[in-house]
Image (cartoon, rainbow, N blue to C red; front, side, top):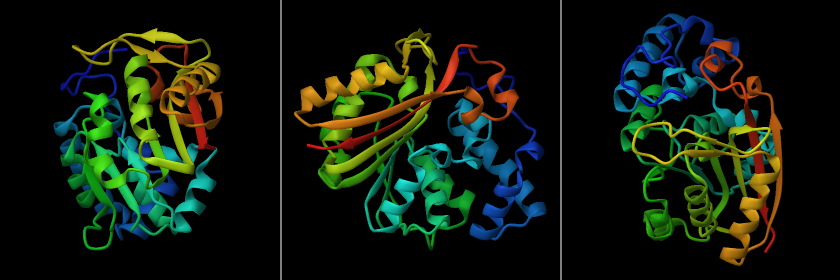
Length: 282
């Protein structure tokens, strides 16, 4: 995988918005943001460049904020219903809060929504993207989730949300890390949960467990899980935190997560999509 670059020549920087404007995307922005197609086109190009200038992530370059990954999760219906019923949700690695907005647009109240990310500028940009500063009630908590994740349990996340999170969602985060960092992040998240809480994630994985090069210079090589190894990681988390979890996981073809062939073309051919849902039982 190429390392992070600020250059718009990066293989994951795509200026072609037209093919991203699917009927569902247009409908969402028309209904939620009251933006029609002509105005929407200019608006999204503006946001795309601003987001790229903040951090040139592949998901930014590939317009990932237009297609919230939570809708692809097998647990999506469960998550939506729980939040509709008043459960608290934490979007761990929330970027511009697109997954939370997707839930809100589908009837979930935003009062009990929290987003956590290393970069507060993304959260602020989310208000501009969705034009909902006066109506969206979700709250942001800064967290260096790409840095010292061992500090997660003593961060503002723990101070405000310890034992209060019913649903934790992590989209495209864990595949950025090595095994120990993944463990630290999950163990920190467990601190925020309670019995019957769920942790839901979608990420890159592999049929066989694979070590991948770091996604940017200065970081450790990443570990891509398969359906079995992610359960073993949860076993380790359960033992260390003295909690119990029931874990369901599945590997899917990469086009489930990335339906645009262009978004997959620069990736390793062994890459797959990986979903998991962990339910706290003790």
